[in-house]
Image (cartoon, rainbow, N blue to C red; front, side):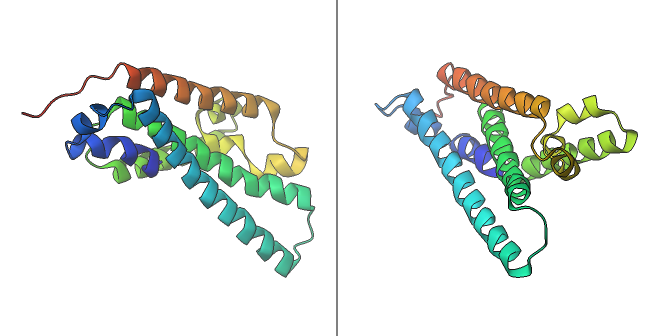
Length: 178
């Protein structure tokens, strides 16, 4: 989440937005470039995690199915993608955030608390507010797959993050520092 946030907040806090948006390449190209940077970060982190986890699993032979392992390990990549796109949207809507690391940490902590609360009171509908609930390890183990309603909601949220941030960045005004 910090990566997505900081890509859009640094241009405002360090007064480089007017230079960046005055270039002839256009806002769409800037948005796509920053989005590709975030996705590349998620891919590098995810592939590294998946490979390291797979090698550790092969080393220790835990005794559970490889398919289940890929579902559990893949959930890390999906959660990372969720927070990266959420951070991108938050950075576009609040570009003057002076502490993106604190904001990212707070949001992730609150999401974790929502999942813990949902599981403690055993009310599943509250779990739709947090991506940590979407990929419950126990539910993956019991069902052998991701739950379809959580995955549908997850994909809907990802598309919403992308659409809202794209529309906002096309309409953004630049405060020129003179």
